[in-house]
Length: 363
Image 1 (spheres, one colour):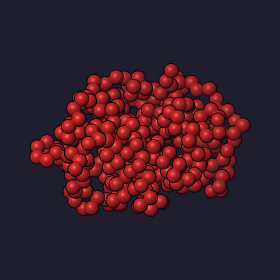
Image 2: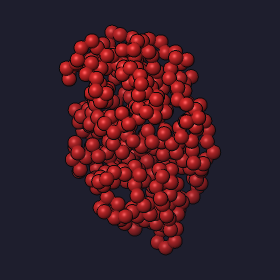
Image 3: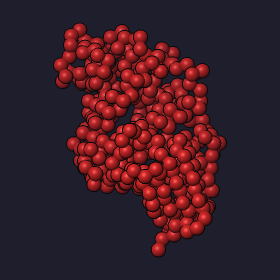
Image 4: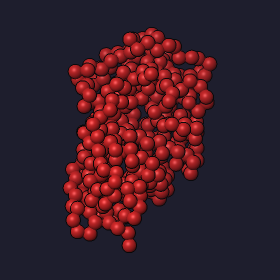
């Protein structure tokens, strides 16, 4: 039975083709893509690279999201240890993650991410090295006290997924002295998280968080991992390797998840024409809040997407980010109709105002 307070909303069956079903489709594809990226980088680049990459990804997300979300989650007036734990409970619950929060004192509060773990979907958990866990612990959890301006706040990790324990767990604690940088993250594997009481957990105002907002937040949660991680992978591994890892993972995920996503979008699985795939790409673009136009005439079908919400930033990302991400649609097309090809005619990341693709027969 799910402990996530939002699970009834997020897991409820949606009418195929509805906006909420389309947001679910985007959330599912990007969630799978991020898990696939972790496995690809770990298996081909090694444990050290994937650990460093996860560290930089979570540190960047922390810097961009942690403090800016405090007010909207109603945490600004709480003791720092309690606020930090409640932040992780509420923000991850909105993302569809099974997580527990346990208050122990004003200077000590727990979080426990339960199995099955969202980030290591399904059997993927078996192939994830412990360096990934250490990466996000150092990148995010050890940084909370720094961001809050509280040098006495640290995180004590009591359980990790890769060690066969009881999920990922630990507590934020405000110590009685300032912590050295290496003390902001500590380990205590002999400690057990206390029992979770749903009645004592924090809640979001249902009037401020209706179903549509929850579904959009759930979509954004998955997309943010890809938005942050791909540029960090380019910076750390270099453009060629990052494009290779990212495109390979995207191609495989597109192949594995196309039919699921297609069904959520309410599209006809029997129509394998170029025009049908153009409509698929248009539906996915709309689900991501991008403006799209399609032209089903002429040689094949054309898809034009103006803007790129996923990577919206003052400075366009490196072209390798597009090369990685574009593998999603190449992988989906291979299942839709392996006798078709996806041609990139224009790229936003080279300074053009839009992406334009042509879907046509091979040869």
